[in-house]
Image 1: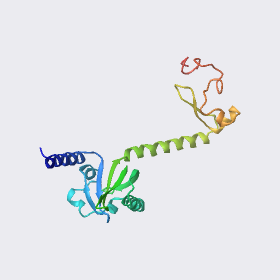
Image 2: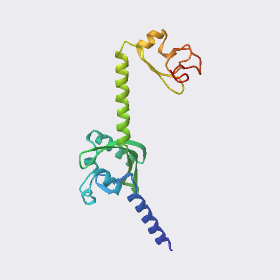
Image 3: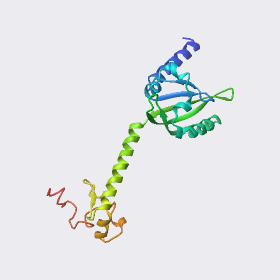
Image 4: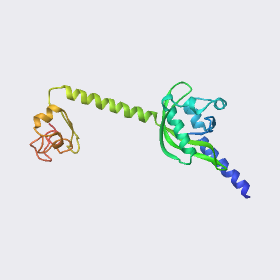
Length: 202
């Protein structure tokens, strides 16, 4: 095998790798035209390949992220890659897709030829994080509203995870003296290994 055949074989392997990657890969011209997208990108955004030639990156970027996108394209065209980016893409259906990844620039004869982006779909992860934050906010709101003292403990370590203001007042000390500390000797007179709930199973 000569050098040219080896190079063509290597290119074919890389092309196959890109097309079968679940990451969203795109190459964008300086004017925003999409030069290349892989199958993972097409699947995630719901486009057919022949539709991409009429798209610009600004049509698939959420409007709130368009100025960020322009700034990043300018930055990488000046020679600096961006290792961590979070943005929101808009699928053909209108669905918002949260992504994270990296961006760099391909140069030809010293002139920026295209920006290259590799993204991962993090929509489910972001939704789970937001749901958790909302759940924690609801819990804090409920705990602050009730007049009873409420203390939340880690079942394995017996460390105080959270306590509402009523519990702190009943304890009679600053919050820092109870949150993150063991419940033994602080809010409970029992010694370690004598918990009436986890050790004596009452």
